[in-house]
Image 1 (cartoon, rainbow, N blue to C red):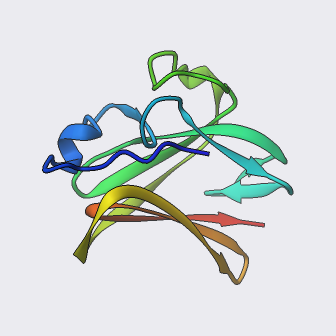
Image 2: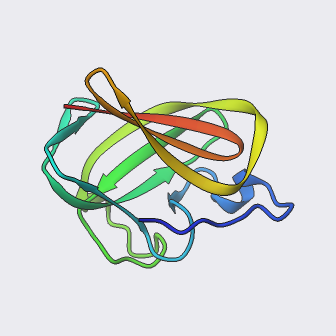
Image 3: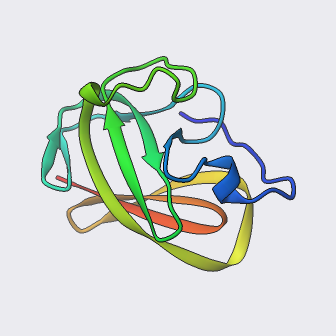
Length: 128
């Protein structure tokens, strides 16, 4: 569950406040629900609902899964509630996505969460 802001001529780095915790999308913090236990960078995430955020940068993003729900933006973010984190590389696409987008793709041992906005692309590997 996430809001989908549009670029409207703006830059992704400006909208995501590079180097600081950013909720995915806009408005309320994005939420993800796991129906089975999963792992992120070897750390177990129990089945349930979590908020998802990122610390963005030009070359890599740190993806954060946090137990706090129903937060507005990232204003109430508390690192003490982090369940798992992973740092993943940023790739650049030739096409640009006007609207912030998240899609999931099944992998051999789990799923990849693909994040795209503008020409920025990030893949987050969740495993079983």
